[in-house]
Amino acid sequence: MEIKVEAEESRHLHDGEQKLPLLQDAPKSATEEERTLIQKAIRQTFQSTAHLANLLPTGTVLAFQLLAPIFTNLGNCDSVSRSMTAGLVALCGASSFLLSFTDSFRDKNGNVCYGFATFKGLWIIDGSANISPEVAANFRLQFIDFLHAFMSILVFAAVALFDQNVVNCFYPTPSDEAQEVLTALPVGIGVICSMLFVVFPTKRHGIGFPLSAS
Image (cartoon, rainbow, N blue to C red; front, top):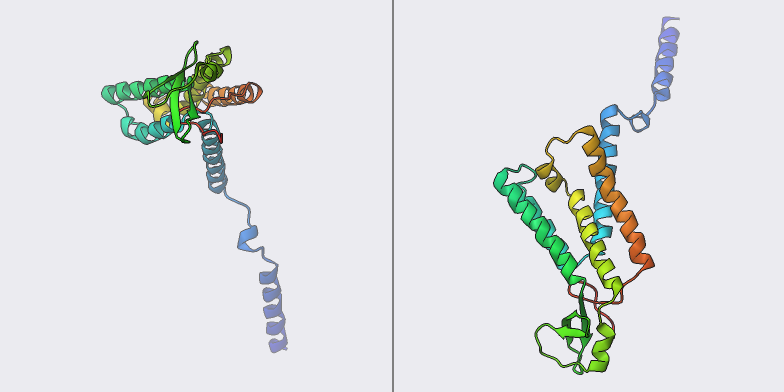
């Protein structure tokens, strides 16, 4: 009898162990859920930055992403690094604005030549190629060029606000209201400017932008 009782108790214990939920089905702890939300936010931030970077000159974005962590000291700014960061942001913003007025064409040898669009046509930067007045007239400045240049500044500002090192440099301890603005403003700028770039596309292929096939 004692042997049967022990066997039954052993069987019940074994059944109870089988009914226990597996470790992977256990509910996530608050720390794991918090870590997951942070990872999602970081991933969305990088995706938004990458999408906006496609609207800007490649060299300007690369220079900013390379120098921003150095100039900001990874977000731990003093007066000198804050001034250097402000200069970097201003210089990259001006570059995004000016490069919006550049364009390119291929000469008779197939070489790519860059120039600045003017009200009279295209001014070749290095003067290595000559362009006829009839062809140069196709590159004249238009109102949409100024619109794109203004939007480029806004898009670069959004990219800068997505960079936590830059934000921590200028706003190390923002208030709740300031934090809401710093979070929502770059997203709003990115969405509006992306829509405007789609509605009013540019035909220019300037410095730092994809080249034309022809």
